[in-house]
Length: 119
Image (cartoon, rainbow, N blue to C red; front, side, top):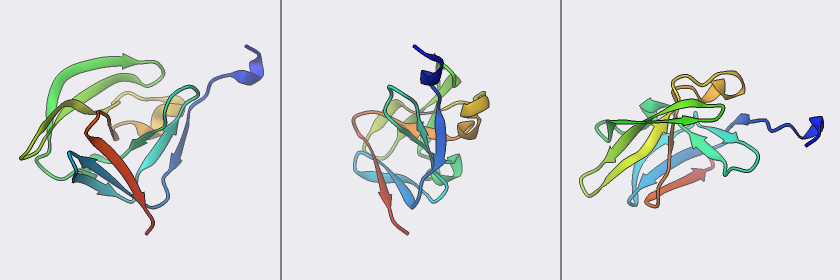
């Protein structure tokens, strides 16, 4: 690897409204989302906690270390029809190039879908 090929993360605002769906039901919507892009990884969309509908998230005991981002803290998504254990998480100690995603939520799992609509 040469010095010109250093892996760096970029965080950019998402243009439009981000809608997060779990089991085909919208659980979050915001105009304040950001996208994290890292070489070799799929982009991740992050939203503010206040964008998530109240009563949907339950804190989990799960913690995982992520290179560059620090420790991930997880939530279980709970709706009337389904639970998604550890399918939402955030990085309370993200710093440096990852600082803009600190305390913002991202989502994953087979039942999670992210849509972006124009405003």
